[in-house]
Image 1 (tube, helix red, strand yellow):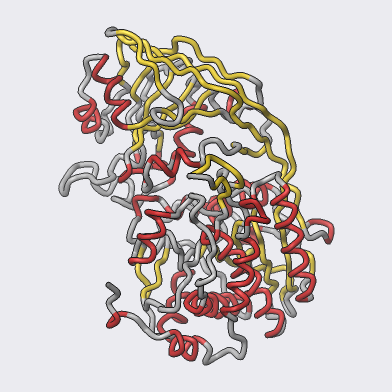
Image 2 (tube, rainbow, N blue to C red):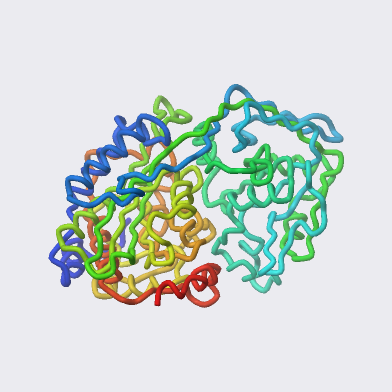
Length: 543
């Protein structure tokens, strides 16, 4: 049941949001862009597939027709991102040897394992298994799960999320890692990277739905899709041979086989005094084949030069990729990615139209459609390492990831990473004018701020605004989407879709971006933010 008392009509909000602007987002345009990009013809917009070419061609055609300038290097529409692609080939053999005998583990049902290393075969033989708590080494928080324990050549098991996730009130660890708001240390991507720095032979993140923010089926469904990484100079130092996830109950069997109480060890791992615990007598062997190749994918970049400060940039970004063709659900193997994130790309196109028709602002505006977000934010990561427009003079990065279809507009605007930067204030002012209010992410344990394309730029100091996202579970429609369609073939466009509410959100983001682009101010990270130091290092470039 919808609570109509907390909903504002679309018409009223359209009027309020448009009081200072003649341009209005067109729900029909948003819907049509989404329909096209999420159609089966685009094959799930997989990276380095025919679907990528169709997506890039469509975006370039749209930006060209609107009269924007290319925003890529050397006056091009695209920035080529050099990536490494690996994909499982054939069956996998995963065996745990324990004091009580062998346990054959099934790839998919029990364990999900892959590798970013560009080799034909991954073989780990009888590697000792060790529990490394949360797998976190965070000196600034006085936390080290590894201590001086040598995990080289071992397979480490680590808990998803941060040490203080769901900690009881009054527990000594409470608040150590921002309470239930997942930090980067809670993300699987960090845990994989840290395992490599520690020299492990493999790392398996112990899954639980509450800590991960999504069920096992979400992971399993995309597990046969290719894995991507940016091309690295030293794979051995930066990526372990085998990495992935293990079902919580399966991990518990391994602990029990070693005579250990997993629940008790989880409690112990909440302490800064924790030290890794070997699973005595337990080893694991992993063997699987894979294909690998270096590939080129593309970020699409369009630009409107500023009239007074063309060297200063306000950036909008959304990722164009989904999962392409992957594990079938029924007879459907196309992961269309309609909400995630054809809607976000549609919003970028509509924002470009609004800025073009409204006239160029004082600062430049760049519209970025990123590749390989679903593979680990790789398009944005590549741009961050190879920026076309200087990051030091990028005013802010406004990220759009997943808008929900519908006609009813909630007055609540979810802000992912609320309180981290001053960009919140710019959004709040326009939201209040429109009779809306900001609320923090209702599911901070999912670590949404560290799971979308603004994050690589934030790591290098660019203030990020990630407001209005469809996967947060803050209302009935969002909860339904997360439960039934997120990262599944059922994330499809249907003929009954309406994008009226999304258009209101696009109007709001247009107003915020226009305010920033016509201003001479520089929003900053708030004191205490983990990105504050990176931005401060380039302060002299913004004087």
